[in-house]
Every structure is written in structure tokens, then in C-alpha cells.
Length: 135
Image (tube, rainbow, N blue to C red; front, side, top):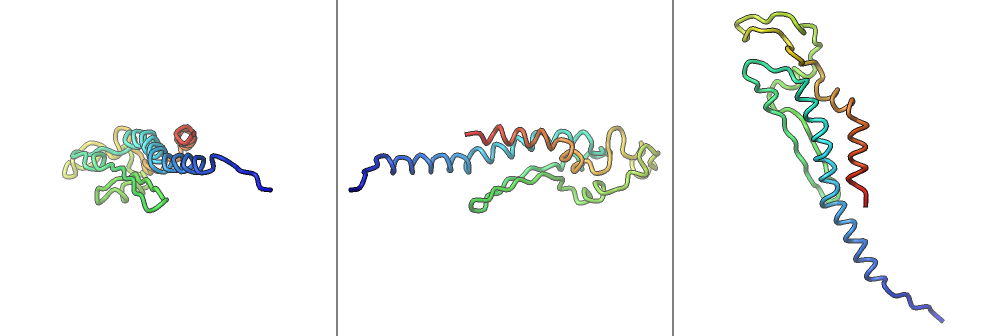
């Protein structure tokens, strides 16, 4: 006395399509949207020297490992970590001509430029990820 249920295979196929869409497009689009919020604010706060190497070394990377999708944003200049973690004590002080002249951390540069940008835009990033991941 069993009951026949129709459409199980079609429901499974549709569920697989939704999961593939989330993994394939929506998650990547959400990460790219987060990059578009954090990256520009970080760039505004990045100290710009004579050569602009640091600000031009901003990178964004998305990697997929099975079901895990990871986004990374950062600076690839070999000295980026040192500038990012600097205390900012020299901010606004004159720089010797042998080091390019000008002032340290001018005009809008500040220490921890990337992590501050990420923290300050957290609510915006969460909102855009929620929006992108809607079914």
C-alpha cells in the first residue's frame, strides 16, 4: 500500500542546479563585490611615495579548492607589511631628500590601511554578500 511520489528526480536536479549556481557564480560574485568595497578605501589610505610602487601592488585573488572558495586582497610590494604595520609616528614629518623628499604618510596615508578599511566596511561587505547570495 505504497504511495507513488512523482517529481523526485526533477527536484534533485533542480537542487543540484541551485547548489552549482551558488558555488559557481554567486559566491565568486559576492567576493568580487566585497573587493570592490574594501579595495578603493584601502587605496585612498595607502601612503604614496615617489614611485607609487606600494599602491600599484594592490592585488585581488580568488581561489577554489573543492567546495571552498577563498578571496584574498593585499599588497604584493616586498615592503608592504612593514608600511602597513608601522606606528605612524612620523606622519606629517619631513622626509630627507635622499629618500624622495616630501612628508611621511602624506597626504592621506595612514598605518594599517588595509585592515582598517576592512573593519570600517564590514557592515557594507556583509550586506553585499547577503544580497549576492540570495536565491
